[in-house]
Length: 407
Image (cartoon, rainbow, N blue to C red):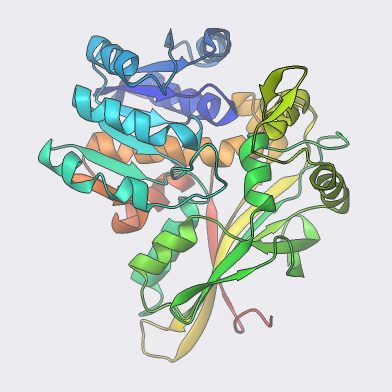
């Protein structure tokens, strides 16, 4: 049994803490206690109250600026968790890793580091910590969300059980939910818009090929959702998958967006509201995208009104393990927004990231996933993770397709 500290009190943090508390209430064999910290204590307290009401488990709450390394180190040394689960902003990853090293605590996150003043997210900053974590006898696990996270595990499960090699890989992320808002993002608006407006990149021929943001789109019929327009964009698991599945000839990431979202985003870009460089307004320096985030609906507030389903999965083509030639498999999860809200008070986009965060933490604390240094989720055994997805609210299915995507 081990104590865990979750940092970040948004929708994903809320789901992760609720799911961890369910295990505490069940038998306490993995999580003995759960603590929650954020810059805004009121958000932590609200989540703790919901957890207490739903599970009967008390969650200790703390106020902390995760970028203040010294203060965070003192907090870790005071409460002594076995693991820090970083569900804060990607800008804060390195600071939290530094505090974990200083306090001797294991680390886990769901998204890789991104500089605050540059729309660029890459793993090399965190991979550089490998030796320091190894020397301390500590483990850092990167990318235990859904995408990255589950999508990476899907690929590694296919390679373990279905395919000798993966030649082609397409990751398809569809949110078919309707929240009734004219324009809102289903996770942190600042991170969401930075991702969407960045140039698209996909892996092909041993290198990343860059194309204009939202420049390539296709129609796809998603089970449980219907036909949707999906756009090719860059996502961080492409970088780690290219490293750990080196035989891939091509890997792409696709995400669906409705026409209204694209129209609003285009206007916001045209008027400069998605800029991340500071501007002066009435003698005060502001970042337009951060101001936009402040006036958009809080993603955690969308739960009560969001209806519909998400459908996220991998389509992989390669040589079959049984020697029967080249085959294509589609592994996916379908999650219902209303069911997610009924269980945790959060919509499915938060649920599909918060549950894998809980699972990754559970596998580290139970010793099923272990190591000294910094590891991506692709380096771990996919089987216990896949088993826990089925047991904790994100059941998956696998089917053989006639062939790869025709585009």
